[in-house]
Structure formats: C-alpha cells, structure tokens
Amino acid sequence: MNLTESIRVALDSISSNLLRSILTTLGIMIGIMAVIAVVAVGQGGQQTIMKEMDKFGSNLFQIMLDWRRDEPPTGNEFTMQDLEIIKTNVPELKYLLPCASSYSQIKKGSQTKTAQILGTEADYARLHPLDITAGRFLTNSDCQSRRRVAVIDEEMAQELFPRDNPLGKRILIGNQSLIICGLVKSDSSPLALGTKYVYIPIRVWLDIYPEGNISYIEGSTRNLEDITLAMQNSIKILEKRHRNEDIYQGVDMEQQIKAVNKVTGVMTLVIGIIAGFSLLVGGIGVMNIMLVSVTERTREIGLRMALGARRRDILLQFLIEAVVLCLLGGIIGMVLGIGCAFLIAALAKWPPLISWTTILLAFAFSATIGIIFGILPANQAANMDPIEALRRD
Image (cartoon, rainbow, N blue to C red):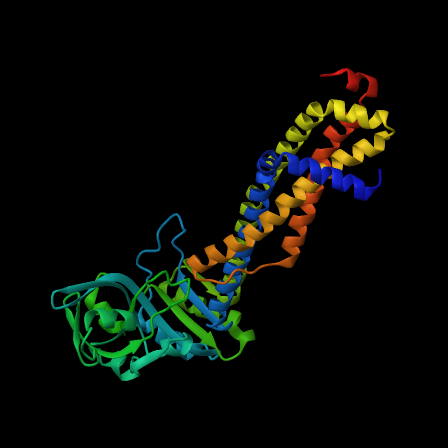
C-alpha cells in the first residue's frame, strides 16, 4: 500500500465516522485556536502600548516618593521651591514641572461628572501629545497668578454643555469656580480606559485640595544621553534639601518601556502555555479514539494482513489517520483562532498582531501531536496476529 492509498483509506475511515471524528478533533481545534488568539492579542496589545509610550518620547522621566519603604516618606513631599532649585542647578534639563492628581466631581448646575483633576503647569502640553480642539491650554501667566481656569475633556464638555459653547463657561470643582479656557480631545487610546481629564494650574489644585501634595515631578532633557544624569542630580538635590536619603525614586521612559515589554511578554507566554495544555488534552483524546478504532476494526486489520498488507502498511494507515485528524483540527483551529483574535482585539480597541510564525508552529505542532499520540494505537494495530484478528467478532 503506497502513501496515497494510505491517505485515501484514512480519509474514508474519518468520513465514515464523521461525528466521532469531529468530537475527536475538538480538543486540537480549541487548543490551536486558544494559542493563536492569545499570542496575537498579546503581541498586538504589546505593540499598542509601545506606540502609546513612544508618543511621549524617550527623554522623559519622573521622580516620585518611594512608598514601598517600611516607613512611609511622610513629610518629604515635593514643594514648588524644590522645582525652582532643581531647574537652576541641573543645566541638562529642558522642562521640569509638578503634577498632582485626584479623582473628583465636576459640577455644572445640577449636573455632576467624575474626572481626573490634574494640577500642572503650561509645559505639560510640551511633554504630552495633547490635541487642543478649542481655546488654549494653560499658560505660565495662569499658573503664576493662580488664575481659576481649566482645560477640560471634549467629551465631558459635550455632556455638560450639549447646546452651548463651553469656552468661557464656569464649572465647579470642590469649592472653587473655574472658567473653561480650552478643550482637549478625548483620549481614545486603549490605555485611557475611558478616563476624562481636567487640567488646572498646580497652585489652584493645591488651593482646592489643601491636604493634597504634588504627586510626582516630570521632566525632560535636551539630549537623550543626559536623562540619567539629570534624573540622578535632581534626586540628589531633593535628598539634600529634605535631609533624607533613599526616599525618592526616578524612572525614565526607556525603563518603563522595558518593564512593560517584560510584563506583557511574560503574561502572553504564561497564558499561551496554559492554552497549550488543551493541545495535550486533545492529543490524549485522539489516542483514546484511535485505540477504540483499532479495537473496532480488528477484523478489518486481520483481513488486510491476510490479503498481503505488511505490518508497516497497517502502521502507516493508522498513523496517517491520527495525523489527518490532528491536521484537520489544526486548520479549523487556526481559522477560528485568527477570527477570535480579531474579535477580542476589536473589543479591546487594538489591532491583533497575527504572526505567521505562530500559525506555522501551531500547524506543525498539531501534526506532531498526531504522530506522537498516534504511534501507540498504530503500533498496536500493526502488531496484531492476522489469524487471531480474523477470529474476533
């Protein structure tokens, strides 16, 4: 029996027990589908996060209090004087600004909305890719004179002022009335998670939240190679001013990108491995059904041997049948996996990254499973005594 004849016999056997064959390949289908979908969505999400982080540039850094310490660094919060001294003594800096944030309610008449209130300075717009759709952003004059102005999210402005131009209108944050001076385009990135933002001068933020403090310091350098030096020198100045060491930690954008890459890569790998276990379960299912098939077709095996089929022909026949079952499951699983990847990515609002390498590996893996789990039943069929096989009912 040649290879073509063995494949034909295997396909005939599969088609004659179609329902059982479908159920047999179900485990392989689910496993391949899960692996491809998880890897595609994971890689697509990782790429999306990298694109969002790249918008900020690589020469951006943040300095914050290290709250992981056994003793909370209370009393060492940042002050506006800290920033002025750092700007004077660190020439590598291009921009340095304070940031303070809190979630709060925005009121306009009887309407109430929740947003993240970010207190900062005019240079914030130079460090972040904000899209001002109307009016203007905060100015240095606004920040220095504690002017009660706010730049609000465009989507929230439409909710608060559905029929009016929001510019020049007033909103209430805490006990302070602020005039809207600009609108910023709503952040549609997957990382925003629907958060709405209101930007106000840092000194106004501190007036609204007298118990609050500057959350972190954000800065950038003129040259990328100076970022580590500028960050370290800024931390040294803070430690000297507050007479305390190891309470401030700095992180630059490159470190954040590496950390995100590592975390998303590990998560994708772990979930992919978990999904891959279903392939193992599917392989065991194939072996189980093939063993049942060998038992059911004992007389057929004996008859083939009596008519001249060699042991290797019987071995090849059942091995090919197992491989074909796994390949069919693999092909259907790949199609379903790509479809699931696009569906999940559409819901998550990021593009799936379909890797042909992953698809080919999954296809090869399904064939390998067919060989591995098909050897035992195929070998059992090939080692049958034709006389004993013909005697069985």
